[in-house]
Length: 218
Ligand SMILES: N[C@@H](CCC(=O)N[C@@H](CS)C(=O)NCC(=O)O)C(=O)O
Image 1 (cartoon, rainbow, N blue to C red):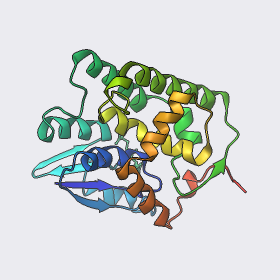
Image 2: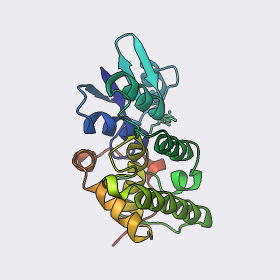
Image 3: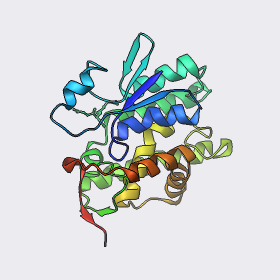
């Protein structure tokens, strides 16, 4: 099975399925495509009609879109273990994943993932509202599922993969979080898979100007 991703420093969508596959120890080949260059769409078209990464190629099957890939992996390889076991928790996890997948536009555009940078941005009200909402989601999950483990739903799940890139954005630009929010962010940053992704991202040298936001922290 092959996972096609983009630059680890910048590609927040790529991190999601990679982290699920890494955390659950799935065997896969990794192909990295640079986001730079006028031939990007052409290069990505060889993998997926969406011309976007991540893309999973499993035999004759091609699955694109980070959430669809995670869903497929959970069904096909994890016996459904990618999601919480209880139907109510699973519905809750799916709700926050859908909220992340279709929302937080201000955060996405004004705080692009840029792992190796440490920057300051003038956060707009829309960004501050996104940060508050994410803190609320994390805190509520931690309050509810704390007894079962350190992750959003106790045990590691797709929900953690969907929110891991946010923790990396907060690492770059800073964010004022509640205690449970900070503890959850620390758990993400301490995850061995996330640490190895950060290490690889920090070694990358390619610069994508549109993802370079804010002023360097002195
Ligand atoms: N909703 C998609 C979004 C994927 C996406 O936007 N990927 C970016 C890389 S991080 C991409 O492929 N950009 C190339 C382009 O837009 O030409 C997902 O969840 O996978």
